[in-house]
Image (cartoon, rainbow, N blue to C red; front, side, top):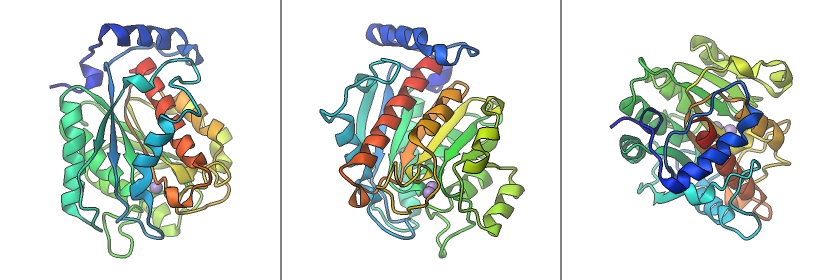
Length: 307
Ligand code: MN
Ligand code: MN
């Protein structure tokens, strides 16, 4: 079956919400607003075995879920689109959480592919960033990337382009190297990067990766991004003062508003997304969990408004 963004379907309640999303979608007036999927599947991946410094991101999905449903906020996006009831939480992928595990990667790919095959859009909650390669592999396998190009937009302090890290090719520092090798995307645009080593610069040049450092953000023309887009948000792309609940504190990061501005500027359709690297053991008063939960809501709103 065709994926959600090729196979529009909507129930009556969803149509009302989508009509509202379209009506308030004036933040992006240049683009036609098209609705696609009726609901968005929310999937957790409790994996931290491919981390390189600290562990704890396996508890990330539960923490984002708790923040999404906490009494602190409500179910609406900033544009007053009620999105939380449209998130169908299908639980966590069953994995062994073992370092470098091909079986775990295969389980993630299969779990995402099942959703895409049934016409769902998917937002995945990590887990460390290693989960993004098997997710993108599902998009490659279910859709024809040659026929339907996909731009991956990646927000992170780190390029995650290492050929391998400490002998682990499935490390959380390598998912985009693996995904580029495997032909999972037509282009990669990275924001927030402020830790690139010479090796990772070489890797970026090899694959024509557009690496936008925080210094360059104001000078980068966001309208040059071509859809469809898959969005991957590593929470350490934000400044540690905004998102302290991550394993790697890298000063000089993006503000929450800058990340929302990037999401606002993405062309449709947004075919899928992930929010990764929340480490609740490092969080302060659940503030990073709330950052992750709000990103899930705003990304879902953008999916509904722009397909
Ligand atoms: Mn990352
Ligand atoms: Mn990172």
